Amino acid sequence: MPEKITIQDMADELGLSRNTVSKILNGKYTGPNETRERVIQKAMDLQYKGYGVYDKSSDFESDLSEVKNIMILSKGNFRDSIFFSNIIDGVQKVIRESTCNILVSIILEDDIKTLKIPPNINKNLVDGIICMEVFQKDYIEKLLSLSIPLVFVDFYNNPREITGKYDVIMMDNEYNVYDLTKRLIDRGLKRIGFVGDTEHCRGFYERYKACRDALRDHGNYNIDENSIIYPNGPDYFDVQWMSRMLLSKKELPEAFVCANDALAACVLRGLGAIGKTVPADVELISFDNTVESELVNPKLTTVGTFKYDIGISAAENLLLRIQEPDRKSQIIYIETEIIERYSTKI
Image 1 (cartoon, rainbow, N blue to C red):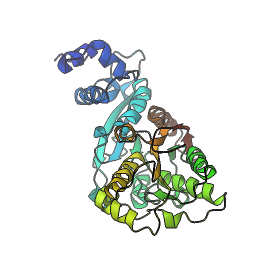
Image 2 (image 1 turned 60 degrees about the vertical axis):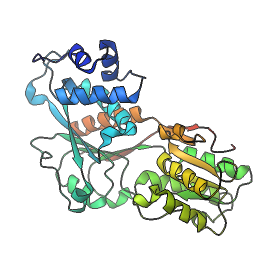
Image 3 (image 1 turned 180 degrees about the vertical axis):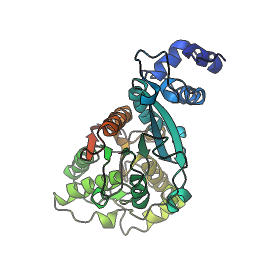
């Protein structure tokens, strides 16, 4: 492999066309996500341009001292997630056009419990961090103590408890969840519950709040007795556990609003295990519009999120915070959309 990596080099190694690789690296690819992830991973491995190394042949000229190192920090291996790969596509779009390198660091659950910061995260090596799936208060405060500009995708449940200078990129968790819940109410449904840990992150809480507010605004205050809300953990994705939770209800709810598609899929399987069908017996509303929402039967009515735009906003705001580290903290919301499918009668 020559010293200067080209798109054709990567295309040859991956057995793909140059056009396909170029579209993926420029955020214009609409084909299979597996192909996208292979190309992005190869770009990271080879440190191609904004994917890990400063490119001297870029259209702009800059002293190497001005090149910024941007860290993507996440809990778990987000590269296996299409949801996060789409966000990263948006980040790459912005970073590719700036004098920045992209670095990646993964933290484990034990790292969070012990407040262990990866050794490659310090002010001498990293100029800014985009945090994904980092919701624990103590760990966020530990990151803030490093005095490195930070932008979070979603956040800790109660932002007012955390002081400091940082930005948060959120999806609009409330407007369309409220709308969908109201549609259920308008059709005469009364027993409507929420599924998910409301303290897991700000996004989950806002989705719960939207469902609760829609019910309360129409005289129904029984959301919690119809809900499945417990501390975060793997139980939510255990079909047997979910079946027991459903059977524990004195009367099965007519509909559930689920915190995300993965939870909704587990509720769907749990209902099937106890002989109930969707939407005939119980209707389901979900959130995220991930691939899983279309793989289950019936396909899920969900709230779609614009992951690519979230990534763009995260990168743009991080670059601005690097330039102006003392500016006021911001929480920025990206719009969502309703995707009507077959898990509801709406």
